[in-house]
Structure formats: structure tokens, C-alpha cells
Amino acid sequence: MRFDILTLFPAMFQGPLTESILKRAQQAGKIAIHLHDIRQWATDRHRTADDTPYGGGAGMVMKAEPLATAIRVVRAAGEQAGPTILLTPDGELFTQSIARELAALPRVILVCGHYEGIDERVRATLIDRELSIGDYVLTGGELAAMVVVDAVARLVPGVIDGESIVEESHSDFLLEYPHYTRPAVWEGLSVPPVLLSGHHGEIARWRRAERLRRTLARRPDLLARAAAAGVLTKADLALLAEWGWQPPGMGGE
Image (cartoon, rainbow, N blue to C red; front, side, top):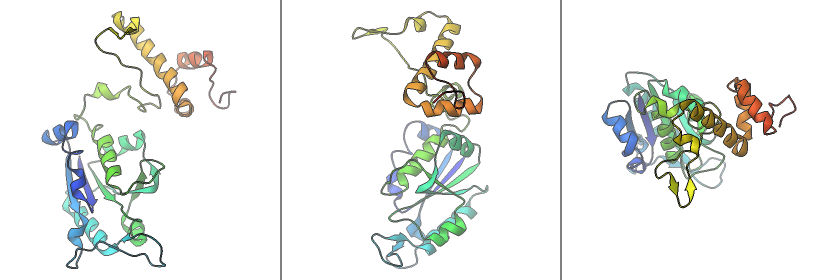
């Protein structure tokens, strides 16, 4: 899978995208990450990529011409097409399901907004989708782009062992179960006996129950989504009912 990232600050990506799993994925040819400095397409000698907003107001706005040219050149550079996505605080909330959707594509082009944003005319004519990683504002879209690349890349086949992502948080609207490793007793705290039993069926049932328990305690809103998606079994619903939760519309929260 190919990621193209358009940014005013390409040096920010050194480290996050060149270490650990993403580094190994690139070395193995599972993903390719290309950084593009938007200032390269500015036409004045100062490589100006922003200007003051019409109508006045604080801050600067990314200029239409260099950004539009950058998008068009980068789109034409790859053999395969992919959506051009703007990282912006007022975009669609980025979720695990969107990460899975993007991971199935051969290519994604990410545009990092900055300052007060980009010229609206570019947004209206060249941006296919807008994403936000949360209800807060960053200094620019670079950190958001790193988050999207990391979340999407790990779902590309071959990047991570497939079993590692089957039951992780948000894979099916449930949070992940607790994990333990050696030693069996640490500072007086013991690993749950079921995990030491070697009984795989009991371990699986314990882990499922812990996923439900943790989701109910921390993100009960996700349980409603899990119920609506049909991923909760009769056993799940019976256990949740014992804890006082029922699907919306059936007397639950």
C-alpha cells in the first residue's frame, strides 16, 4: 500500500514513520510512504505557501495554487489512484472501521492542513474526504496524518500477525481484555488463575467476559453499537443483563 503525504513540514515525520513496525513494513515492501513538501510547488522565490485571509481575521491560510499543483502532481505520480484526504478538525471522526476501509485500498493521499486551514476552493474541488482524529485542535495536520498512517498500515496484510488484531480494542466495538506476563506474582498481585490453567476454552470465555466487562465500565456507548451490529451473542447479552445492561430499546441505557 502506498501513502503520499503532502505537508509544509516533512521533517516532522522523521522518527514516527521510520521506526519499529512501520520501518519493518517499509523494508519488507508491505507499505511505501512518500513525503511531499508543498513549498516545492510555490512559485515565488520565498516559497510562500500561505497568505492572509480575505475578510480579515487572525492567522494565515494555505494558498490555493501551490497546494492544488502539489495534489495534481502527486496524484499523477502513482500508478494507482487513491482518495485525497484532508486532515482537519472539522472532518469526519477517524475510527477503526475507517482504518480498515482505507487499508483495503492500494493508495491514500493525505493532505496536512496548517494554520487556519486551506483555501476553500481547493477543498471543494480536489479533496475527496476529510478526517479528524478527535474533537480537539492541533497545530497542524502532520500529527493526525501520522496517526492515520499508523492505524491503517498495521491493518495491511503482512504488516502485523493477523491473530494480533482479531480481538483488540475496537475490532468489533468491544475493548480488549487485560493482559499479563511473567512473573505469575508481582508485588503481591497474582495473574488470574484461569490464565494458568491451560484450559483454552475457559481462557477464551474469561477473555470474552473481560472484554464485555471493560467495555461496559469504560465505553458503554460501544455496547449499543455492538448490539446494533449483531456482534453480541446470546451468552454475551445474558452476561451483560446480569450486570444490569440491556440493548437500547429493551429497557437498557
